[in-house]
Image (cartoon, rainbow, N blue to C red):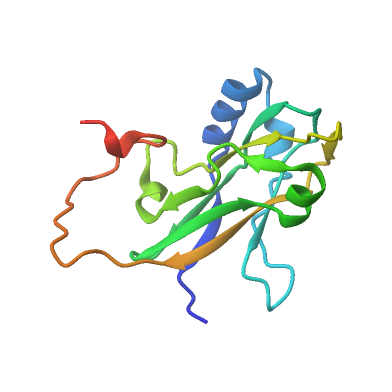
Length: 167
């Protein structure tokens, strides 16, 4: 196995600003409970991402979750974020962007590369999903990628969502 990345917490000030922007409340007590993603078994491909707070979603409801984490990874790698398989199977819990793509240069973004995960309970069976603080709800898988022979990208990331398409 190649060791190509390291998970870290975002700074407390960044987390608190993002928490307040998302929930309108103070997240000081939450910051200390943020856990870094880990694999459950040596054969696991995915690193479990945990929710930093209790979340209950009725069918059709959505939540944007500031995870409190960021990831440093070597060039040539991407972190793909998926919902946890069991939650998708039982509740149709889905990521709003289907698959989250965390590029290696996102680590240096203006928001410290703070990873947010937006989920929706898309249950068509009337099931409510409850996630407790510390529950694994998403998983990240590192994937190596290539570029074309004639690639000449030289842009520098300045922000987060949608920043690479802004000119």
